[in-house]
Image 1: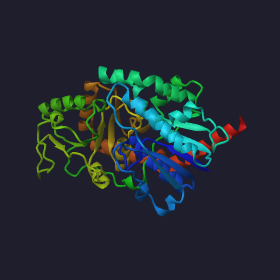
Image 2: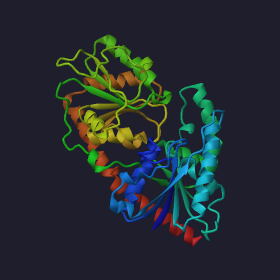
Image 3: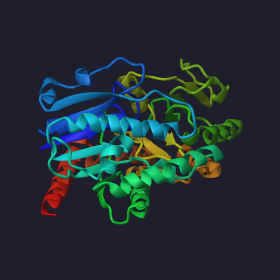
Length: 402
């Protein structure tokens, strides 16, 4: 089988959830013997790069990388939409000049021009191709944390809706995202497929922190939808009560958004209670993995999400989870391994953290172990890639019978 993967960037050249998903999807499809042409964006002003160093020699036998420059950034309302459309035209131009493939997997807006033509025939493609699209979190149809974000969402909605309705198949991460996309495209061929995680993240020896103090962690950049304002409000309240805990932030959190209590990451022998630590951006995956394995609970209080990779990483590392019930998070978290709360609800967030602080050690350990078991059951990349191949073959077969 021969596929084309359209994406607006691929890890490690471009950082981001969709870009990392593109990397692992290409990698594991290749491991399953699927030929994949990867059309990936190069940010404006950056030199052309080929991500071959991130793949094994065996995987590279099945992979072809086609770098496509992303249009120059402009600053006017809707510039991202316009630039995405221009980028999709550049991708389509490259695609039309190459050999025939069996299926096109589109990430976000990168296949807009192809979908607009409804898989139209090209000079080298003498048949209409089946096309599947993955818009991941479709955050523009989720709850907005501010008026500005709501207006941005309203601007994006008609273009996302159009792409979803014209694509032959829709890849949904599940949970609330399936309902959203079924509403937008009632007759769409819906394929529920989670994001995966690799075996090296699995921690078979989940245990409680050796200090006896419950250790929380947040991972992410500062962005309004990530819920850091709500989290900071709750932490200030808990600090005033004298609760005993550690809270670690990983990511580029601006100084203005950091709490002022005990910000040193060099933990003393007898830590003050509570302790807040800011580690900044960590690019070494092993360092993040170690912090997660040394933690008890990941907190993810976002207003909107797709299927957060950080939750999968924390689950595989043996963390219980506190997260908002948005996107496909309910596919990852339930009462067995964590607590789900409503986005923007400070009281629920405070109550969830307090509940974890008073949870008997045995029950917390059961939650941590349940996270690992859930990863093994449905989120390992080997399984996800195989299921993806099966669904793509099904769509190809249906297209041939039309």
